[in-house]
Image (cartoon, rainbow, N blue to C red; front, top):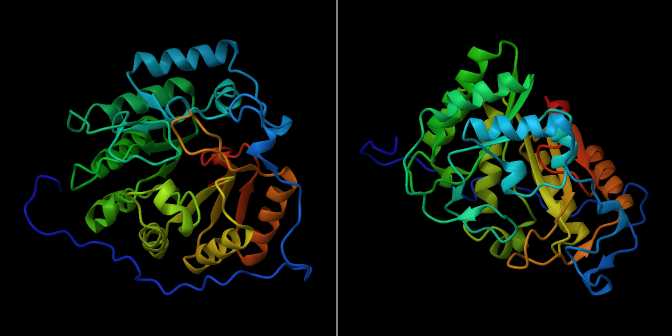
Amino acid sequence: MGDQQGKSKRLRPGELKLKTAPAQDPGGDGMLELPVISVSQVENVRGNRPDWLRVKLPYGETYKNLVNTIDDNSLHTVCQSARCPNMGECWTAGTATFMILGNVCTRSCGFCAVMTGRPEEGLDWDEPNRVAKAAKTMGLKHAVITSVNRDEREDGGAPIFAETLKRLREDIPGITIEVLIPDFRGVWEALQIVIDARPEVMNHNVETVPRLYKQVRPQAIYQRSLDVLKISKEQGLRTKSGIMVGLGERDDEVLALMDDFVTVGLNVMTIGQYLQPTRMHLPVIDFVHPDKFKWFKEMGEAKGIEHVESGPLVRSSYHAERHV
């Protein structure tokens, strides 16, 4: 892939003709009106949040053992790197999401706390072995594998995804696997490597509505992300994608995005509250009320999305075992 000569076939943004007109409220009353807590009403966005966004700190022997297992195998988890608010709950329950291809990302998304830069090393071919060893030690029956972006490589690191799935299945018979992949810059051959590995769930997050892409995902293209989901679905995979709210999107834009998901045959959608990881990242525009999340779930499933996981603390891998 990355070391071979020749021109790669790329996904072409705009290839799909999507209907993005906002859907009407089933009750005929338009958008759901709920109280919105703006950041101007909150003294410290990171330290003084609504009660529904407060979480317990990680604790317990199970959590400590998981930390040791991750460290002993020189692995990374998106739970730690992305400062996930559910880390305490999930790790105490004995689950975690592995982040492969290192911990340095070639992109600079406005919402993400993962380190940005140019990775100095090539692919780590022993990493799949260490992931499988850690997953077996943890007793996992369902594993989630995600990664940083490796845009400096033509293959985007896709071969490591495939090898990780292979090693997990060899070491843990019957395990189910979700992969949360980058867009591979639209390089078809890279995406195909992961598709051919046949994960039980193919996840690629669009993260936000198209209007906000320049601020939230400056190196990504909304249509290209939809193409990734469409091609994966056409080849028989169960597909999943997610967004954050609270970045300034409008309700009608979220509903239009759901229509796009229906068009590409998406099976599972996740919706969660954006939380600013550091003051260097995009600010929270508003804290969305829990009832609005319930409404989003009802609207998405009414439109035809099989399952919508929607809540303030929902993240892409939250309750992932339910999405198989």
